[in-house]
Image 1 (cartoon, one colour):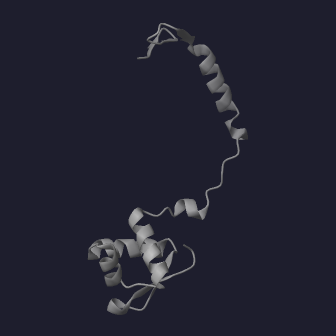
Image 2 (cartoon, helix red, strand yellow; image 1 turned 60 degrees about the horizontal axis):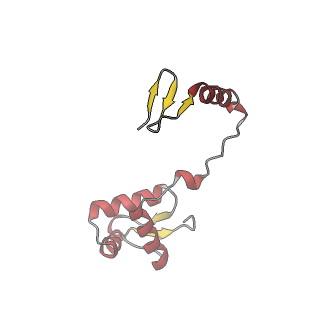
Image 3 (tube, helix red, strand yellow; image 1 turned 90 degrees about the horizontal axis):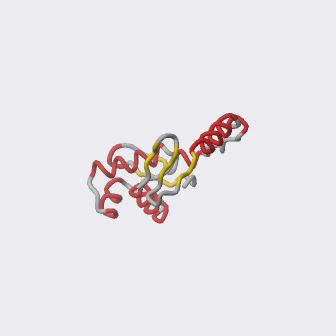
Amino acid sequence: MKQVIDGTLLEKSGRQIVLVDFVDRFEKAADTSSEISRREVSNDDLTTLSQRERQGLDYVQRNGGATRKELEAALGIGTTVAWGVLKGLNEKGKIQAMGNGRDKRYLPTGGG
């Protein structure tokens, strides 16, 4: 077990490490943080799919499209969950809704 005592880190073994060096290095790193370039976040990073969404997208792609009822039966999920999966995939641009009401079909967009 490690404990901070009087500015040093005392390990169970009794070995002491001076924290001043660590703090100095940390502060220097903070000063130069503006020089560090940040990785751009791609659209794919923002559209991370849940496991159910991945399953739903796979089903829609393999079958060239699907209705809500087909997705329910294929994945063994209820109506509310199926709507949520399809809505999420549609909002993320992975599928496109075609038609209205009971005739609504979800087609792959090629963005998956």
